[in-house]
Image (cartoon, rainbow over all chains, first blue to last red; front, side, top):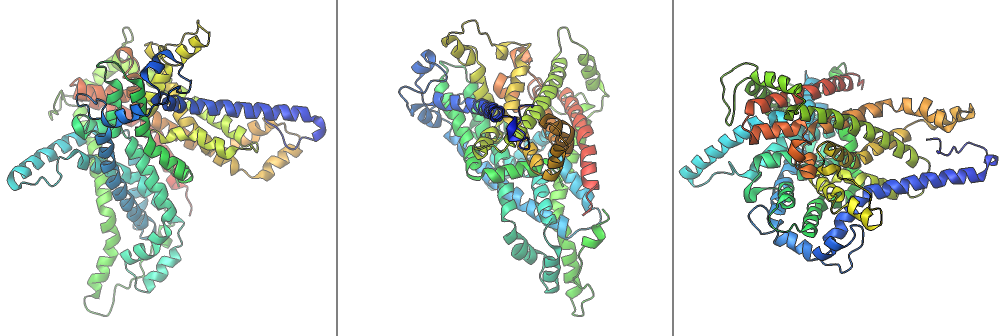
Length: 314
Length: 319
């Protein structure tokens, strides 16, 4: 810590000491940058190497004869458990789960935040506190009851299917996961919108009420048009969390072709039949990481803001 | 709480002259609660109700399927006995010991490294805009991807060890990931890699929020840079320390995926955390009651940390 340069120190104390300080600081920062980049770098170069090169070459070396073959193989051919049709199906499973779950939980969060700040009632703090606490519980404490309930719903769906020819989505793994992620994401989305709307001028809403605007009119015409930043933050936060979830996915959609991406990736990597194709594994991992990485690169500012909002309450 | 009355809005006149209007305005009055009700009900049922259900199950002798006859605290008695079964270690002993090691190192290193990097980055660094996202991007990855990447990197036959051997350092030996006594430390490494950048961002935001005048005054008084940080800056960052601690503590207790992806549980389950214990006993070993009891213990630990925090956060908010 003593290497930190003090800008107030007179220049006469020696330009060289100051320069040395700067070199040490930049050196340390560069070293840590390497630490953070290394695994991604290794993953990326490995995914473009041939198996021959992986077995005989250096982990850190750039691919000598770069090949995109492992990516195609991971996408369309690699074995997940016993089926060998690549990870593409599981990728779409995740998309089908993430999109509705994010949209529903975000919209509900916006409405909840609106009510909890602009239409307060006795006990609103308690209601909010109870929803907020739900963000922090270890999901192990609800995992088993939810499995039981989803099982019952699934059996009911089968009965319904037999009786009417439709199961109305009951028992469908994707629907189950959407439901689970909406329920356990509500705390965070409500928190984001509540904190955002807290700072929103109440006078505007009062004025609109005097003019006869209804609850939903105010929400649609006044709140929503002014909520763009927090919508982006919430959507990114939810997208990242739900895409990356593994616990719920493995508990409620852990086998067969209904698995989301994270579970499928774990299966690909831990499939021990035959020769382990590391390049294909790494390509699969990259594919699983790409959606959230792209979001991070495109909208990193909002990503960080979301994390902060989730961390620093109030 | 005291601000409730002021911010509460109810301007719609309830005693409207037109017939039928009072019904409508009453509905308008109820509407906010109706809108909030489904979410709140879902929280009550699927969070609090399910927690009670799990607690209930932990007092039964449920095995493969839930049984609803209360049979007493047998599951807890077994966990309690296992807590002291260190030779050979019971799975529960391993899990909670690992939790202690992992929690302590993960939180400690993330805080120290995060603060250190934030202070370095706060020295008017050129290229901060490039470095910050590099430190932070792991937070966007799933634990599964992180686990896969580090599993490869730490594998003795493929990763770091092999690379250094090729570079001529043939005596280098690093097989923690296959060693039952050290495997938990590889989870710490990968965990720190993932979260420390975010903690850095929290500290950086805190540092940027400190009044520059205070710093200047201290420097004029002749404080060295080290003293400046130790005596003034770090004490001012107390709230950030608290928030960062809460984030890390709850991430640590929830950690499950990373152990699975990085170590597959480690040799003989030696990398298990309580979350892995819960999952394995509930879904694989047909010991539902024991699994539920371990989930209850996890929940109580987290509650002891979170509830005081939430209470203070929500209470002292005079708006």
